[in-house]
Length: 107
Image (tube, rainbow, N blue to C red):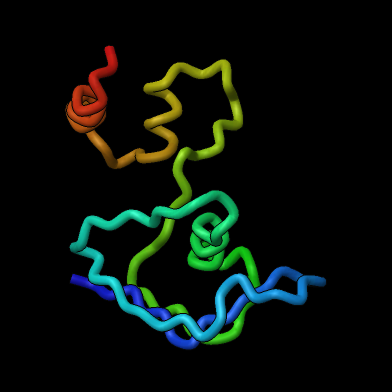
């Protein structure tokens, strides 16, 4: 179990007079299965970019886990899917890829 802890998070885009987040505090257990939902333009992607360290902000985001963006950008679109998966996750076994694909009902 790990925690993602957000303390007094405040963020606005450069040149904006309005904060996207102001004084936000919460903590999330990484064992929880959660999703951020909301209308377009309410800060879901912005928050994820803050987790990734793509923007400067005030306050603290504390986490002992790594964040990744999905879907991953594919540099060479001429490669086969299994080649791309092996590059993204070289330690995974073929059976793990097949299991995940079966969950998606994809052939």
